[in-house]
Image (cartoon, rainbow over all chains, first blue to last red):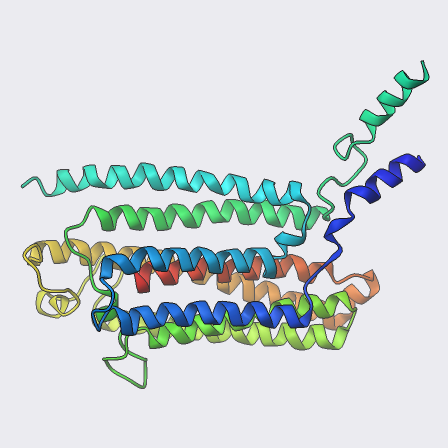
Length: 117
Length: 242
C-alpha cells in the first residue's frame, strides 16, 4: 500500500507549477503582439507591396498556429497536465492534417470539373 | 519466490492498473477535454470545407473589400478595424477567464465573481459586434442563398480575366453561405458559453463552490470559453486575413 502511494506521488511530481497572474498577462501580451504583427502585414506590408499576397498566407497560418499553441498550452493549461493527457488531446488533432490533404487534392479535381477550359 | 511476487505487485501499481486517476484530472474536466477535441474536429471540417470550395473557385471576394466598415462609424475604407476590435474583446475575455480560474485556486469568492462578470460582459460585447457585422453584410445583400445584384457584387472582387458575372455569382454565394454558417456556428458557441458562464457565476454567488471547497467548475467552463477564443483565432485568419 505504501509503495503504491509512493508510486502515485512520483507520477505526479513535475506538473505542480501553474499559471500566476504575471504569466497570464505575459501570455496576453504575446497574443496581442502576434495579432498586431498580423495586422501590420495585412494593412501595411501587403498593400504597400513589400510582401506579396501569396507569401503572406503561410506567415498568417504559422502565426495562427503559434497563437493556438499559447491559448491551448497556457490558458487551457494543457502544458501543465500529465504527458498522457497532453498526448491524448494533441495526437488526435493530427487527423485534421489528413482531411486537409484529402480535400485540398479533391478541390483541384472540383476546379477541373467546374471550369473545363 | 519473493521476487516473483514483487514483480506482480509492480505490474499492479502502474497508473493504468485501475483504482488510480492516470491523467490526474477530475472526470468532468477530462470529458470537457474530449468534448472540445470532438468540437475541434467539427470546426476544422467546416473550415477545411471552406478552404476546398475556395481552392476550387476561380475568384473569391476580397476580405479587405467586404469587411471595410465599422458599423455606425466608418462606412468604408477601414479594413480589419472592426474585426480587430472583436478579436481584442475575445482575447481579453479569455484573460479575465484565466484570472477567474487563478482566483479560484486561492478560493477568493469575491475575485472569482468579479472576473466571471467581466468575462460575461466580454462575451456579450463580442456577440453585439457580431450582430452588427451580420446586419451590415445582410444590408449589403449577403445572406444564406442570396447575394447582392451584379453591379454591387462586383465591388467586392479584384478585377481579373477570370472575374465574370457568372464566377462572381458562384463564389459570392459560396462565400456568403460559408461565412454565415461558420461565424454563426462560432457565435452559437459564444452564446452558449455566455449562458454557461452566467449560470456558473450565479453558482459562485450562491456559494455552491465555496461549500464544495473547490472552484474546479470554473476551470471546466474556462476550458470551453478558451476553446471559443481558439476557434475565433482560426476563423479570423481564414475569413479576414488569407
